Length: 309
Image (tube, rainbow, N blue to C red):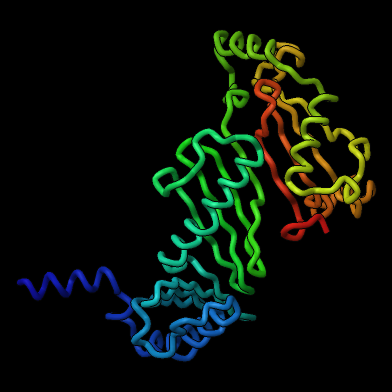
C-alpha cells in the first residue's frame, strides 16, 4: 500500500518523466536540452548547463497539428518553456532559480529603492529587510543578459527595474497617497471629503511644473535632451475623478495632483499627431502632489539606463 501511494505521488509531481513516451524523450534530448543550453549561454548563465536528462527534474510536451508546446524544470532551478509552430521554435524563461532571484532582491532591488526614496526626501519607513516586501518578481530576458523586476513594499509603494549590461535602474515608481480614489459613483461624503482636501492644494499648473522639474533633475534627466513643456500640449494636466453621471462640473471633480510629461528631443509633432506608439514612449512622466509637494509617481520610457540618449 505504501509503495502504491509513493508511485501515485511521483506520477502527480512528474507525470511527463514517468509517462512520457519515446517521442517525448526524443524531443527532450534532441530539442529541449540543446535549446536550453543555447538560451542560458545567451543570457550569460553558464553555471551547471544542462547536458543530460539527469539534470532535468520534470518536463511535459504537448503536440499539436502545427507544432508543439513544452515546459521543462531543470535541477538547477531554471524553468524553461518552448513553443514551436511550423516556422520556428521560441524559448522563454518562466522562472529563475530562487537563490538567484533572492540575491537580486537583496543586493539590487532593496538598495536601489532605499537610494531612490532618500533622493526624493521620502525617508520614512525605508525598506531595510525582506519583511518589508509585499511581493517581488524578476523576469529574465531570453535573448540577452538582463532582466526586469517589480517590487511592492508592505506600505504599497511600487518600483519597477531594468537591468542590462550589468547596470540597473529604477524604471518607474508609484506611491499610494490620498489623492487617488476609486470614485465610481462616489457617495456624497467622499465627494465632500475630496472637495475639502482640494482646499489644501498648494499648487497650480505653473508651480507644479517647477516642482516636477526639480524631481526631473534629481533623477538625472537633462532639460537640453527634451522639448520644452509647450512642445505638444497638454504636457501639464491636473488630475480629476470621473463618475458615470458626471453631475458635478469639471472644476469640482479635480484632484490635488498634477502630471507633467517631457518628450525627448528626437520626437516630432508629426509622430505624435500620427499616434506613433514608439515616439510616445520616448518620454519622462512625473506626478506631484499638491498636498505634501512630494513625488507621487515617475516613469521613464525608451531610454538607455543612466542617460536620456
